[in-house]
Picture 1 (spheres, rainbow, N blue to C red):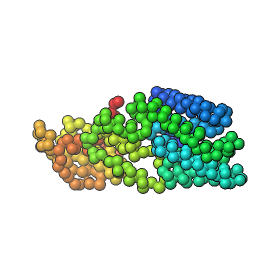
Picture 2: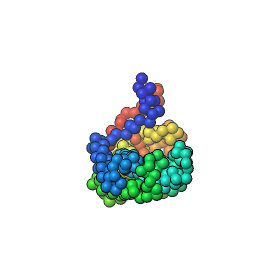
Picture 3: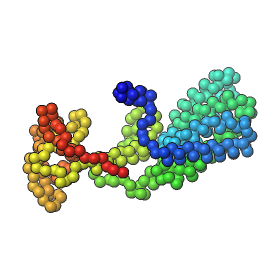
Picture 4: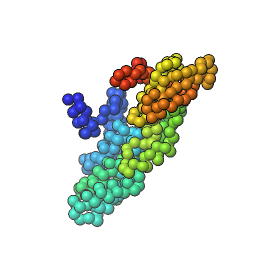
Length: 322
């Protein structure tokens, strides 16, 4: 039964990442403030209720800017370029294509293509293009003025609110670049240990995926750093590496291996406290090596022992506590 539930969750893409109640409340309040400000300005500019349909796409933008402020779809150029370009295309289609159905389809399709080429994909932009076609006489009467009022004015308002509202919270500062700088200034990243991938490495990796990925290279780098930091803290301590002991790196697949300490040369100096090991399982089986006890401890994750069924863990390193 549990496997069926897990399958359904994965099939439907139900989000499982833990998010605090405070984060959810902050997102909701931010959306409220942004849309309230937009409606108040729109009523003064073009009147209400005619302005209602014109700001509908901003509701979708608010979800992105305040629920996922670090997503690629939420960044300032995506919001500004997505809405403005879509508005221009929507008005043009409304004026040049007599059939409203064809005009609506063309507006959304061309807006998607244009946003791709302009590197500003923003899903609510599709609604902005569509509203220019099906918004009724009040919208059609605006012509290209629709691009300025309400679209551009609304975009400026929601971006200003997003920047100001998210700034007091260092972990969700907007745009994403400000959040990255905040992390660097706090020196919160532990670079000691395994080699840290660079920003350019993630840019390259993203370029190899022939589809739009709604996560920035900065967030990918942050996830990598947090993951490797946690793994470093799960390594065994130097005192756990003893003569005769067998240890595994706990890697998956072909990288999994087990090493046994067969000799040692103890020293109070870390660089000279050496151990000799042999690989007893894995791709390097029957090979041996000599490294410092500290390096071996960084490699080892678990101490294991051999039984009739294979290798069994004899000690478990608890996960890092917050």
